[in-house]
Amino acid sequence: MRVCGVMSGTSLDGIDVAVVDIARGRIQPIAFRTTPYPKAVRDALLGVSDVATISRLHVLLGERYAEAIQKTCHRGRVPLRSVKLCGMHGQTIFHEGTPTKFLGRSIASTLQIGDPAVVAERTGIRTISNFRERDIAAGGKGAPLVPYVDYMLFRDPRTARVALNIGGIANITVIRAGAKPEQVIAFDTGPGNMVIDALARPARYDRSGRIARRGAVNDRLLKVLLRDRYFKVAPPKTTGREQFGQAFVEKLIATGIATDDLIATATELTARSIADAIFRHSCTGADVIASGGGIHNRYLMARLTALLPGFHVTTSAAFGVDPGAKEAIAFAVLAHAFAARKPANLPSATGARRAVLLGRDTPAC
Image 1 (cartoon, rainbow, N blue to C red):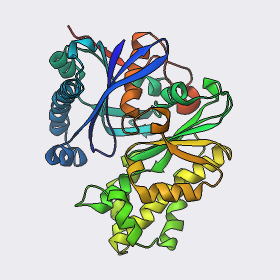
Image 2 (image 1 turned 90 degrees about the vertical axis):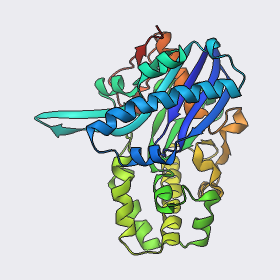
Image 3 (image 1 turned 120 degrees about the horizontal axis):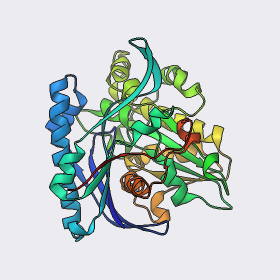
Image 4 (image 1 turned 45 degrees about the horizontal axis):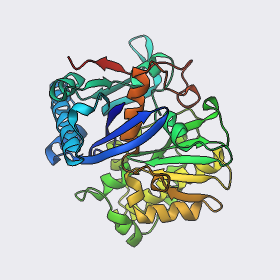
């Protein structure tokens, strides 16, 4: 079956669309394209605060997702009518996987926007969306969901592997040699690009880590940041903009430390928190297979390699998977699992009571 996956992550860079063929458990990438968000849309998502804006963005993103699918198919010379299914993650604007007291109840919740009805109507493709909700209903944290696909792509009978994704938030999937699905460990390690990007404004990101290279790590601040309670909590766990977003960045700026030094320190925080998580949950000699936008930060990747002696640090490209496309591919695979009525969460990763079917179905007609 030919399936497209649509992903827009916490970094808010844009819309990733991957088209893949899935048959007999094999995943064959066909086309991939990233469509950047216009500045006005990105700013609106960063500043969303009222119900009217959320409702309008929900529909607007549906339109933009549909256009991105059409462009990806056109540029990749893939007939749109050949795509039978779409897995659409949507744009997360709130995620609280750990229950909190609310109006007398203990509630965990998540909200992704981007109207699947618009996508199905504009493209004629059956669209599966809202993948995180059912896992939360089953007692999980609603994340991470990509480990199901990491396991399919990277498991090996003889070699331990760690799939590392560095998006706005960084996360790892630890797959021991010969591991069964229930033995997979996966969780968010902490900030990926999110804090670095926010400090680098008005530039959208620190290209190749140039700013971090010319700055100096503030060791005193770094020690304080690494004492954050999140890093000590045992998995399963998940985090996001609620913890490492604008309020976190404003506290860093309020220290009065020079911007270049803050970016160097934030980059080291990302590298150290990832490396610490890998050392704690994997074994020396494992392959560390990186993907996501963070792999383009050469300084960050150099720091990770230095902090992980004895590990083989590479990217998913070495395994035939475009590092920028992996998460979009993942949601294509999750949509395919939904259509096949296969549960696709890993309770060992999300903390759910059981494996459940993920997604909501919006038919094309």
